Amino acid sequence: MVNLYEQQNDVKMVKVIQGTVSPGFGGLELVIIEFHEWLINHKIESYVIAVEGTPLEKNLLRRGFRQSTISIPNIKQNEIRDWRLRLDGEDVAFLFHRHQGLKQLMFVKPKAKVSAMSHTFYDVKKRDLWHRFVFSKVDQWVALTPLHRDNLVETTGAPLEKICVIPNGVNLNKFEPHFKPIPNKDVAVKIGIVARVDRQKGQEIAIRALKKLVDEKSRRWTLHLFGEDTPSETPIRPQLASLAAELGIADNVIFEGFQENVGEKIQNLDLIWMPSYKETFGRCIIEGMASGIPVIASNAGGVPDIIQPKKNGLLFETKNPDDLFEKTLSLINDPVLFSAIQKQARFDVEQRYNVDEIWSRLFECISPGNIKIT
Image 1 (cartoon, rainbow, N blue to C red):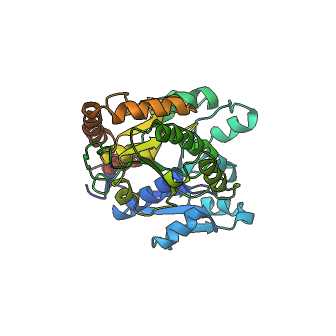
Image 2 (cartoon, rainbow, N blue to C red; image 1 turned 90 degrees about the horizontal axis):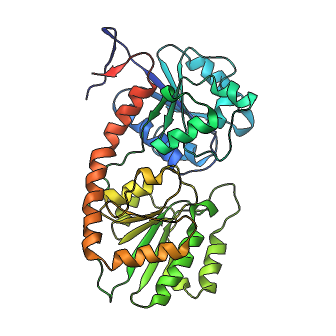
Image 3 (spheres, one colour; image 1 turned 135 degrees about the horizontal axis):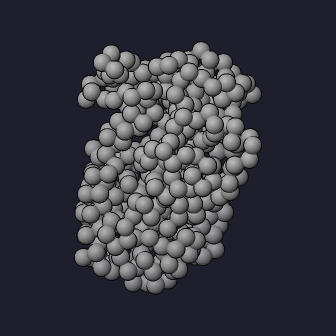
């Protein structure tokens, strides 16, 4: 791949500006950082507007992106508008993550192409006068799955023809397959959840399902929670620890905290659970699939667009620990299905979620004009 982009036989360079007012750190922020890094590595001028002191800003600076990070004080978010004016131009692509950031930028329609990447399924319709005004400034929407696209059309009124469906991607070199067999019965089965410690992520459901597995007594089990409490919200890790102790499985639940090299950590797992109550995509799903670790996920949000039951993973009924228990036990007792899921999952990831191809598609989607990669 080269770093020149053509439009009407003239070489044209594109400047990409990403922005968000998100205070947390999860899949959304990782998308911003990883896409930003990809753009810079491909010699594309790129900047990220981030609120000062947020985990996003700290991680950008820690990774060496000081010159390309635009830090805005939280109490001066109107400065985002000033930066938009300074950076605006016909060769500029604005990509906003979460529509909440649009209101700080979109009082005047810029010359740049404006794209909004949604990371959330909306539960309520956002078709009131204010939202229609804000959304009218968006030239291009990006949804993560077909189900997510349909949700955007229904709740925001976004025109179908203005929505690109581009999933998250996975680095196939970083997440390499390790097709381990089902552990012997004298070895504990290691289950992992890679997510913020948050009520909506379903760790409580997981602990209750784990209790049933432990009580079943045919095997030993451990549950490894990779992630920290959601910033700016009441921590729930103490409540989860208390629940595990109350159920008599405190020794079976290990709080691993946030892990920088999660790819190395999940290679030691036997199963991955994704028990979220509402999940637009769930990047931990494709990371597990790429690593050859079978995934059992709730059938919430856009997840059914990723997992085909009994082919590349399993789905369970959202918020139902009994169903999670039953699906887990059935899989761990079926070595043929276990092996088939491992291999099919890796194949599907290679075909659909190669991160370099994903970022190329995203760049083409948000770029102004008819710019294509040459």
